[in-house]
Length: 129
Image (cartoon, rainbow, N blue to C red):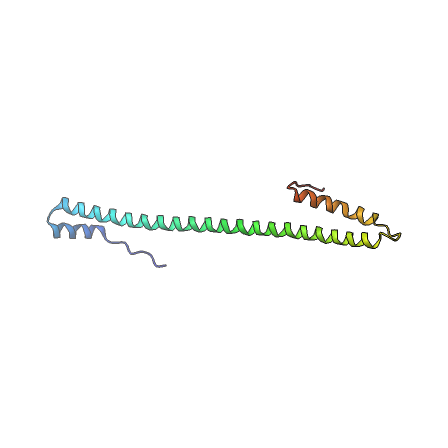
């Protein structure tokens, strides 16, 4: 980006004095022009700051929605997993009802998982160390 060209203020002030013929009027015109230039630059800066703020808010909202979507997906996957385990246990229970097939080891192995799913679905969290 090339550097901004700085105007020669002394030459501009002398030109205004000769063109207007009044020193005070030239100072006032020069002051008003500088004030308008500063206001224009400040408006430009304020607009850029507002744009960046809105962009940051949008990014934050997008990240929050992606996080919520991921958490909801994990919840549904856990529930589907628990449903599949329940189906397997029901199938094993039906097959083993008339025979000597023991489902005790399967029930003991799946009990911690089922307990965790129950607590997770009820809104409580459990920490296993």
